[in-house]
Length: 385
Figure 1 (cartoon, rainbow, N blue to C red):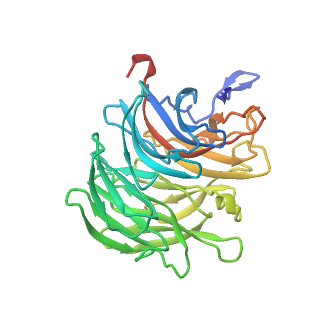
Figure 2: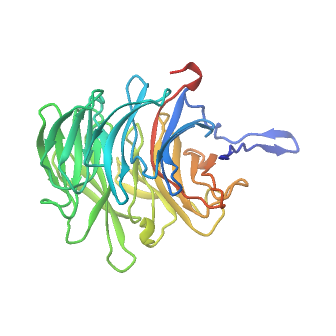
Figure 3: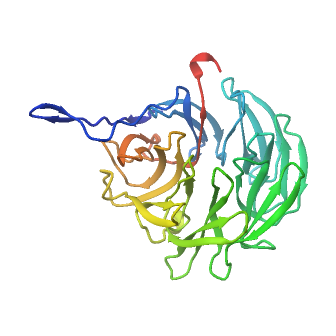
């Protein structure tokens, strides 16, 4: 399998020698910083791919067969990763299991059956919580993977871990008892401590993404609908102290969210409804938390030097430096001789691309992989840890 990687270096030469812009080059992230990328695959090659966050070099991978992990949780000691995916049972049937996999040994330490393929961990990573739309929430201890609790919550569409508390924010789907509500679940007492109604389900179908400010003061959520044939999406900012919605503003269909580590901004992608192919804005938006203003951060077609006819942004992560952004993209986007690209690294200050990564083609020349989720953590293959 050949992986195409391009790291782009831009320099400026004048008649008087080298010229320098006012914006210094993108700083190097701490050694060992890695991008853990869950990848779907149509050729029995789904799994977890690990990239060097500085160079976007593929460092390692773990194949999960036909079914992708939806997310990856890295253990605090960096020796294991946890996720859930399905195993085929018989001709048509399958069942999901919760896995603990050695990050370097790749040994599967233990598996337990689980009702979901989406999991989230609390901030201390004491628990792994499975959620979805077809079964109650399941709470597993880490590292034993023992099932601790089964919680009878409504169908949960998406969930996010509190940055400061042993708490999860879980958003109910349209088919739930309290659709569009955020359930604040305390893992210390194993109880729901608050229910915050956010989404008006007469206007919206389901939430698309949820995130929380680093100080746990605000919750950010996007929700979508099919109205008008092309669908639409809204971004919500909720005060977690009062439970009130502070603002609602328009954004792209199925918008994904990423909050800067300093809590000043929320960046908002536009997947354009994924396979539903809703109206495209071809932008990444930026929401200013302090003044509640929404603006265009970049236009993918015009601002980054990209080429193509379809410009779609999806999953996003912002590094601890508050300057390095990783964005998964879709469509027919090309850059720097690579076509198409599927992940780009962006300098948020200069709004320039610092590197790109392309998924490989199969033996027939087709790309069958798709990036499902992104996680930043540490990885050091050279040390055996």
